[in-house]
Amino acid sequence: MRTLSKEELKRLYDKDFPLWVEINLQLLKEKAYDLVDWENLLEEIEDMGRSDLKACISYLAVILEHLYKWDNFKNLVGGKDAGINWIKSIRNARKEILKVFDMSPSLRSKLPLELTTAWKHARRELEYWLEDNDYDPEKFNIPEKCPYTYEEAMSRDLKKLIHP
Image 1 (cartoon, one colour):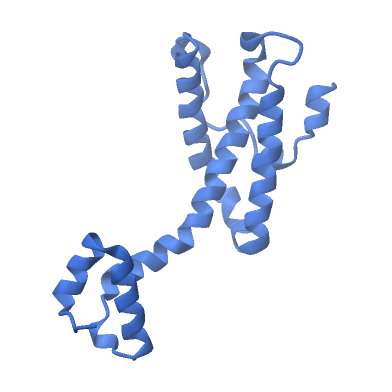
Image 2 (cartoon, rainbow, N blue to C red):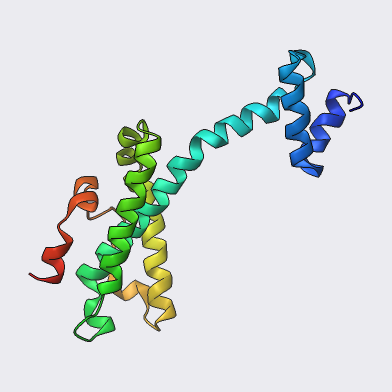
């Protein structure tokens, strides 16, 4: 592999990411630290650390969205089994969060701090869902502040929701 300048290596980051990774890995193995694209490498490492947290925030948002739908919009979907898929979705999202916690235990203490972010995402999805079903979200007064605690989102008894 021919040697690239630092500037060429930085340009490669946007042009051919797998090759950029390969070259930087080789440079690290050879301890050629002065040639490594540190700026982009550090950014990638930071993103790697955040990806599991982002996934957990997304799962938490689904939980919050579907709890809120169950509590507030069951009458909009009607029928005896209305909202059962929301309960299944909550159960699945909780399971996925626990899987991530098994692999990344430090996130167990970080995710509760992201409740506001997760609610922001959930709230947006609730508004889209209402619009998609021909309702005006403004008429439903979805709260700005999350109406659930983290503990409730993660542990509210779903069986009691189905069979009160």
